[in-house]
Amino acid sequence: MSDLQILMLGPPGAGKGTQSSRIAEAYDLEHITTGDALRSRKDMQTAHGTPREYMDAGELVPDPVVNEIVESAIEEADGFVLDGYPRNKAQAEFLDEITALDVIIYLDVDREELIRRLTGRRVCEDCGENYHVEFAPPVDQGICDDCGGELIQRTDDSEKTVKERLRVFDETTKPVITYYRSDSIFHQIDGNTTPDNVFKHIVDLLDSVR
Ligand code: AP5
Image (cartoon, rainbow, N blue to C red; front, side, top):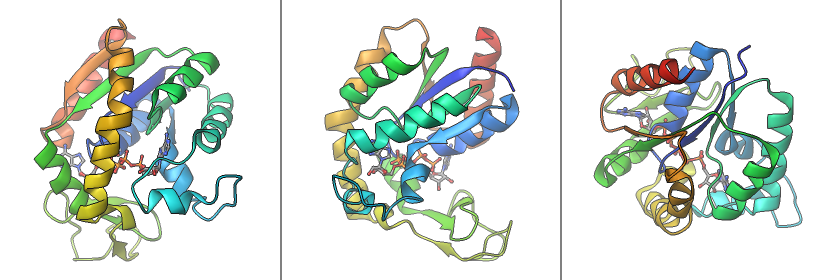
């Protein structure tokens, strides 16, 4: 396994999950994603309630819960692509304390495109594979190509909750972009084009910095 430490930033729906999976596979890295980690622990009881209460409303899960998940995942990884974290200044400062990043990639995508991507996303209930009703449809409608599982809409992908997630991004996560922007390892990539095209730009970038 390579030991590259990559941070993937971007608004909800920018394609962080899509691109991080591809990077992890191509460069033999661990894909650490707080969204998936929290979805698999949605009903876990914490001192702050359950993650579900926050996620279904489009709000951020409290820092202590998320920081602990990220710290233990990073400790176990030889190299990683981190997706969905940090989402506020305090999380960014915590991340700085526990690791040293090699590359930061910010996927920039227009607002209308984000809404289209999120409200049209469908995920396999069984294996978690991602689809899009328009951009990446399955062969048989509503059925996962990989495992035959049922495709469902994430509860936080309704139009109302998507708008709230974008509001939280503007208010709380945008300052994280500003926090990293002047760093020499920060790179902005246009995420408005096709997944293949975005991935090509990322590979060009990673190959130039390795
Ligand atoms: P999380 O799961 O991290 O959601 P998110 O950041 O809102 O990101 P998404 O997974 O929705 O989008 P993405 O950028 O990964 O896009 P994707 O590749 O899937 O977090 C969910 C919740 O968990 C949060 O709201 C919060 O409550 C909690 N949480 C998570 N981390 C936290 C933290 N650190 N602190 C506190 N709380 C936290 O693509 C989207 C769609 O577009 C797909 O359908 C895909 O097929 C399609 N698509 C992707 N790329 C393209 C393209 N180039 N062209 C066309 N379609 C595309």
